Amino acid sequence: MNPRYEYRALLACDIAGSAGRGEQRLQEIRSVLRSALSGAMGGAELDERDFAYVDTGDGCQLVAPAGLPKARLLVPLLPELNSRIHAHNRRAAPEVRMRVRVAAHAGEIRVDPEGGVSGAPFEALARLLDSAALRQAALTGTSGTPVAAILSHHFHEDAVGHGHEGLDADAFSEAAVQVKEYAATAWLWYPGSPVGPRVDAGRGTDAGSGSGSCTGSGQGSGMRAAAREPGTVEQLVRAEGRSTVFAVGTHGVQNIHESKRS
Image 1 (cartoon, rainbow, N blue to C red):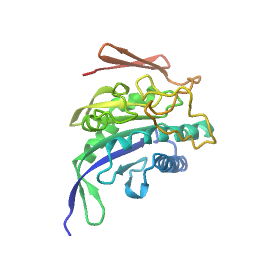
Image 2: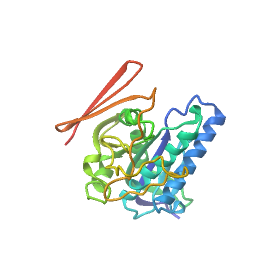
Image 3: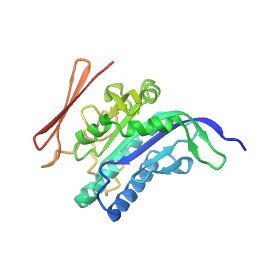
Image 4: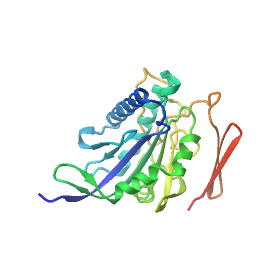
């Protein structure tokens, strides 16, 4: 039987700063990510059995079933994932707290008869996940918003540009990505941030028993950023005209990233 080529939506997750924690802690946070992602998919009414799951060591790649709308990989999935990881961080020891980078892309991939998947879209997905823009966004979010996401321009154009409920175009910040030979325009999003999805001030991630479920609505993710805790990275996100300026400072060091908006 020959391989087939299918257009699929892709999502990748990576645990920031996973190196150097030791094997036992790495296995613990890997298990937390897998459990949080599984719970988030359930909360977003996605059947994880329909997805191909590829373990990448300190993260994973998800291959969505053919025909799944791209927007379903954003809202309410990402707010759900953010809520669960935030709940874990609130009760976990510092050495096993987590921040997670997420990248989303879509394209035609090769599906082997045995179920293996490959193709150029996975290369672009990996570059997005490793981009400086996403790493910066992961630091910029408050302790209550441990998930930062980046969308390829193609994914953003289809999922956000079509006006799906809960996805406001103003909630995304344009960023230039260049990793090795890959150079492209992408779009940043992290829940609860000034450039994140619209929030409902009446609900927060601290409520409940720890599952942290929150379902997106026409007003956005139903989340709010937690108050900044002592010792966390300072944050400034300011929109001026058609650009967004990021300033992240810790121990007196400040990095500025500016991206023009189209």
